Image 1 (cartoon, one colour):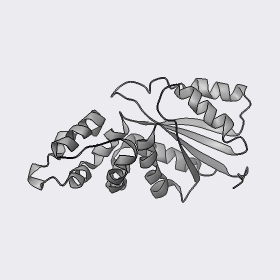
Image 2 (tube, helix red, strand yellow):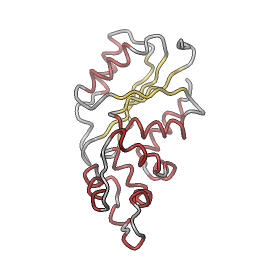
Image 3 (tube, rainbow, N blue to C red):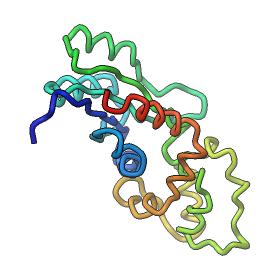
Image 4 (tube, one colour):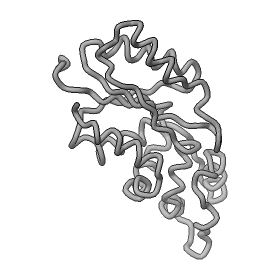
Length: 199
C-alpha cells in the first residue's frame, strides 16, 4: 500500500517484543481513532540513536512522520541508556529528513514491566493467587519494581514470566485502562500523541 504524503504517520519505536505487544494494545485502545500508527521494534537499546535514525531515514522517506521513542530507563532514576534526541534531531536535519516532523520520547518509569504493576490485581488474577494471599500494597509504588520482581512473583506461584511473545497472553489480560489512568508517564505520552493527531 502506498503512503499518503498528506497524512502524518505516527511511528512508535519500541525497545523490543514485550513493548511491541503492550503498545499494540495502547494503539488499538487509545490511538487508532485519532491517528494512523505504525509500531516498530528497535530490538534493544544497543546503538539506540543509530537504530532510530536508520528507521526514520530509510523506511518512511515518502511519508510525513511524528516519531515517539517508547523506551525504558532500565533503572529508577537514570536516563534511557544512550538515548540522545538532540543528536537524533540534528542528524535528521543534516540528512534533509524534513518529512520527520518531530521525535519525542515516551519513557517507562523504569521498565515496561513496572507499568504492569499498576494492575497488580490483574497479575494476581492471571497467576490465580487466592485472595487471602494477595498483597497489592507490597507492590507500591509500581515504578519501584522491575522485570526481576515480576519473574519472582510468577515463580512464587508456579509459573514463569518470559519476555516477548511468550508474555502476550498475560499482557493481553492486564487492565490497560487502569494502567493508562494510573501511570503518569504513559498517560502523558498518549496525551502528547493525541494532541498532535494527524497534524
